Image (cartoon, rainbow, N blue to C red; front, side, top):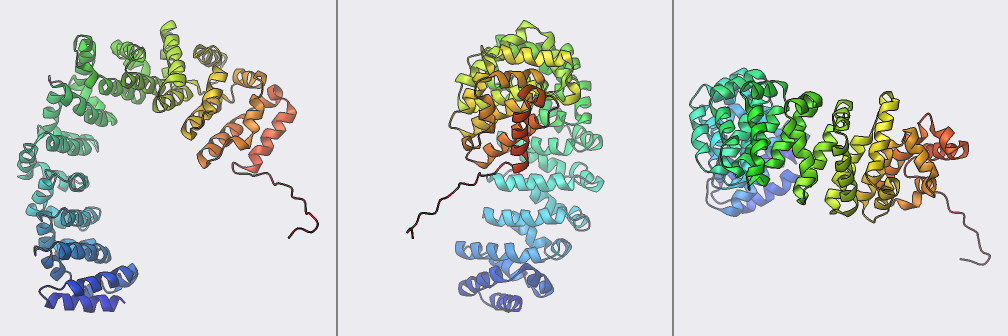
Length: 504
């Protein structure tokens, strides 16, 4: 069949309007195994197909794209880069986005190949066309172009090609298209900057990082909201955080949060700014960040008291992130009654908010209450017990009630709360003394979907593997937990059937 594809390709090359032949070729090509096409790769004459893309015929273009998508998979990236570079170049300027997408997918293969990528780096016109694809209306085309340029920039030669040539001027020209395209270029710059301190240095020298940071701290609140997401991405890297600190950007963000109370439009950017500090605290040191920027935690607590679900959600997420580490837990504990009030609000929202916010509250509670076995000192166990009891008059029943609601996502999130505390002795005593709770744990009929069965199994596993559960739950319940564990999450108890005389 691969030979038939080769023959049809030759036939197509001889005709001016070969729709019938293209349809036949498409059928054959889709049926031929890829390994057979690879064996015939040297015989594949693809240039005529690329030429047919230039005729203004929509069906013909669609057929050619479909055929080329398949055939090009059989062609080595180095062959593409050397022998089809002009066709790729033309593909990037084609008016049909499907052709651009096809071309960029092949460029994506080339830039992943260490040998082939050098061929592209010497092709200034092709690189220029990739840059200009960022400015197109089609988002998937722009994303593919950004991805290819990011990959090219992983090498020293790629960085030089992008930042030490006319390509930098092309990037700056593309940025002028509109706000959306400008942010796409910023996205590319942050992607490149995040790789290494050397990459960041190229980007800062270009002036584009400085331009982004000016927009971040400028007066336009919508621009701030967009820019903070990109700056947060840069802060995920150690060299990125160092740069932001040296440039005074972190202090500036803190000062903007301080001034947010007097800004009626702060709701647009405040969630992103608070998330920035939340991520910073986790990646560096919760204690250092909260001590150096006290406005951060102050604002989080204030947002938790808000009536705005967006603000509450960000506050809950941030508290959960902070409380996921022992150091973060200690920082929160030091705030005393302030944090107790936050816990009450979290408990209230877990019961009364929208389903989406309830799940975020439950996830935060799981992070706050979890302690690994080596962290379970008397002080920390006393702290988590106190936090748990602060959320409601009867927190165990609160979360059990949520787990009984007919929404699998809520059910699983509530089970994760129980799993987080399952190996802590105070929680085991609460569970054992709560009427019907042990039966609730053992009852397989409650869970109907895979995610729920898995979540229940994790709870049982956490209990069964605890060193204190046999003593607190009693030996018979302990053996039932071990049996559940050995049967697995999807065990179904056999139903006994009785044969009836005379039945068919």
